[in-house]
Image 1 (cartoon, rainbow, N blue to C red):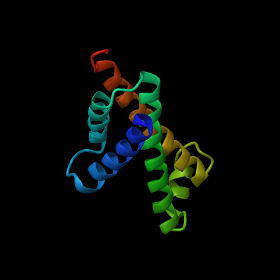
Image 2 (cartoon, one colour):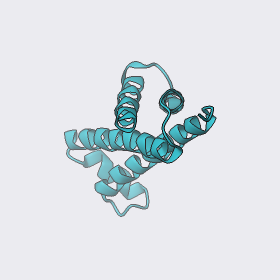
Image 3 (cartoon, one colour):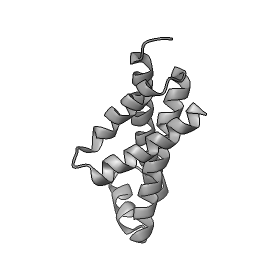
Image 4 (cartoon, helix red, strand yellow):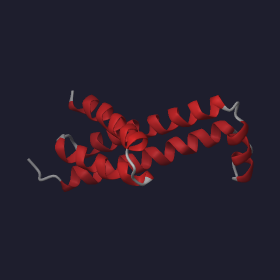
Length: 116
């Protein structure tokens, strides 16, 4: 139950920080760390919860923005990067970067917490 709660909480707080906060883009890392400290789960579960929460959120938001402009911008950015012009690859890379950042932040919070 704590695992699912952690995924949902990470995604909601990351979204709220990104939309409503006048903070840098990386500020969700601090909130993930705090959530992982507050919800005591095993380190591997904490990493997966942070990775799923942020990775799915970032990929979903990137897909929504991409869909709104008919894949025009993402296709051009994917041509600049070594992604073969694939907007799907760009969205996947966005999700992977978010998943790694969220997962590592949550893992760090899990390790910072005092063991039971």
